[in-house]
Length: 135
Image 1 (cartoon, rainbow, N blue to C red):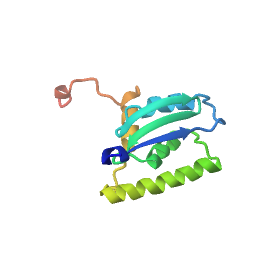
Image 2: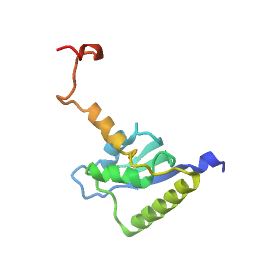
Image 3: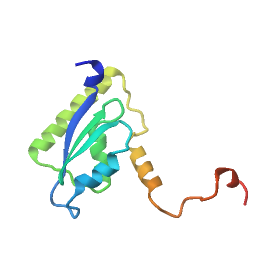
Image 4: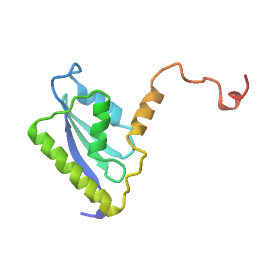
């Protein structure tokens, strides 16, 4: 494997079946599809996503934190939690070894910004940029 292939991670995200939205994976796919660092994302079934991402831009822990903050319920069986801990440790170690410093600006914040900008709300100024300084 080349160095660039080692930086692309292929993971599986599993969701809990005890959630009001029976199709969490499809809605999470739509949410994450345009996030920075996501190379590929595929629908497995109603409770499973297959995701490929660049570890220089994104980690599995960051992806899961975004999903949890948005109200998705992830699978928390023992095997899944063990995999999660292994992924977190290995990705943090790999990022430290290649010099990716964790700055205070979280890449996952951009997912919220993009989602907010795509939602319809009354906080948008419909005027062109050059007209906004005039009242």
